[in-house]
Image 1 (tube, rainbow over the protein chains, first blue to last red):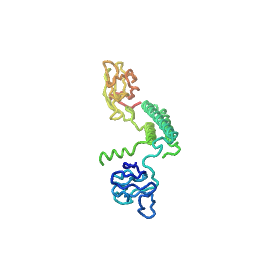
Image 2 (cartoon, helix red, strand yellow):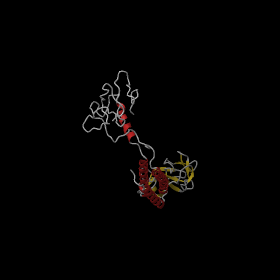
Image 3 (tube, each protein chain N blue to C red):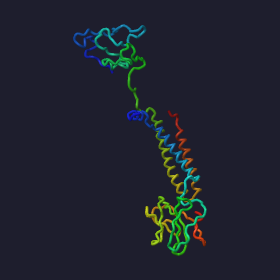
Image 4 (cartoon, chains in turn brown, blue):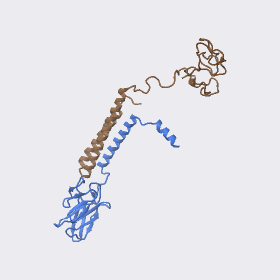
Amino acid sequence: MATRDPGDPGSGAPAHPGEPREPAPGQTSGAPLHPGEPLELDRDVDPAHPYRARQLAPYRRDAGLHDSGLRGRYPGLRGSGSRDPRVHSSGPGPGAGADREPDRASMLNARIVIVATIVVGQLWGLMVALNAWLDHRTGQVWLLLGFQLLSLAVAVAVWQAAPRDR
Amino acid sequence: MDQAQLERIRADTPVTRRDYLRILVTVSAGLAAGAAGVAIGLFRRHGSGTAAPAKVADRLDPGQAVAFRYPGADDRALAIRLPDGQLVGWSAVCTHLACAVLWRSEDGHLECPCHDGVFDPATGEVVAGPPPRPLPRVRLREDAAGIWAVGTD
C-alpha cells in the first residue's frame, strides 16, 4: 500500500516546512519521461519535489518502496520498474483460498473414502487368503485372488472417475 | 543440498488429496499382487513340500522323540513314539509365530513355549493357546533299517 507524507494533498499545503507547495488537483506532476508514455504513469522523481520521493501510483509493484530506495525491478534504472498496467493490486483476489467448487471437492473426498474402504477390505482378504493357503485350502485362495483383482478394478475405476483432474 | 533447502522443497511440494488417492490405488495394486503371489505359491509353507526319504532314527522307544529337519533344511520336525506305541511325525514349527514346538514327555503333549500353545501329539490339533492351525504332518515309515521321513501332508 502506498503511504503519504503528512499533509493534505488536496490542499496543496507542504508536508514539511520549507517545501514547495504541491500542484493543484488535476494538474499533472511532470512531463512524460518517454514519448508516448501516459501522463498518469508516475516517474521516479517528481520535478516539483526533487528532494524527496513522491508517492507512487497504487498499481505499481514498487508502490510501497518509494522511501526505501528499492524501486522497480532494477533499482537505479529509471523507468525499469514493473509497470504492467494489468496489475491493479497485489495479493490474492476476492475469494482466494476459499473452495470455489465444493461439489468437486466433496466428490474427491468421497472417492478417497471409497478407495480407502476398498484397501481395508483387501487387507482383510489378503489375511484370509494367507490363512487359507497355510491351511491348504487352495480353492479359497483363488477365490480371494479374484476378490482382490475385482477390488483393484473398482479402486482404479473410482480413481479415474473424475470430471477432469488437474 | 542442505537441510534448509530440503525443507523448502518439502514445503513447496505438499501431498494433495489427489496424491492420497493415487497412493491408495497403488497400495490396492500391491495387495492384489500379494494375493496373486499367495495363490501361485510364491511363499513357502513350513513343513510342506517333497523331498527324498530321509532316515530319522534307528529306533524310538515309547515316550521318546527325535528332532530332525524335513523336507527342507529349515523345516524342523519331530518324530514321536507315543506311549501306546503309535509312531507320529509333526512339523515342529508352531503355526502361531513359527517358534519351535517341543515334546513334553512328562505331560504327553507338544508345547510351544513362546506363547504357551499346546498341540495334541496324536492328531496335531491345537489343544490350547493361540495357534490358529494344527501342526502339519510329516509321514513316517518304519522298517528294519530304521525310521524314515517319506513325505508331508
